[in-house]
Image 1 (cartoon, helix red, strand yellow):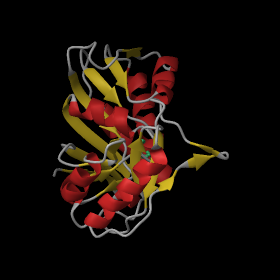
Image 2 (tube, rainbow, N blue to C red; image 1 turned 180 degrees about the vertical axis):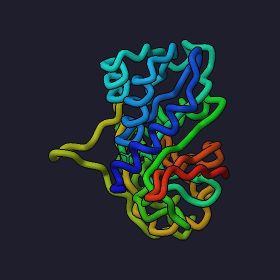
Image 3 (cartoon, rainbow, N blue to C red; image 1 turned 60 degrees about the vertical axis):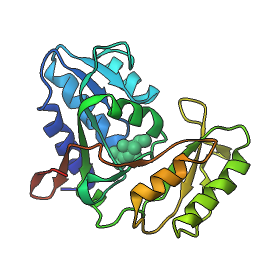
Length: 227
Ligand code: 5RP
């Protein structure tokens, strides 16, 4: 099974967890898109809360009714992808620049299920560059402070502004993304706290103690992991 087939299998397994009447957080990325397609195919009476404009457009095109965060009675279940899945279901997310909306939706959810292909599972987080969302105003100064925060955590790396087609990538909220190629993040909680203390940092892609279950598409089938 190739990576895309693994993502699809994980997305379909997650769609089977949804019941009519639920409010469902809809993640962002190629794996989450498989979930959204499989969910739409079930034809359930649900409300989807998208974590990005792209996911909202996909869900709407497939006939899923949408609600906004805070408009619904709460979110029963959120299903989303990840860039890395580490010990205790600690995650790096934000490869698709949707980390802030994703984290807001995850934190408002009664249950969060992360779906991924097998290559996303790692022993130590950090090989995937950690996305950090910052406000555009004064962002070069903010990036220097991020550098200091990384050094405090023994990570001597300079974050790089994410670019696409020659221009800085803008998030759905109009912010910028810096990516920090940490290598190995030995103490994710300490790093998360250090980054959050920098003025101008909106949020970062470390999702700690948020995932309740992981469904991993693997060559032999879909594996279920708990923290
Ligand atoms: C978007 C994300 C995605 O969930 C993450 O990048 C994984 O993407 P994919 O499923 O395409 O591998 O965090 O911000």
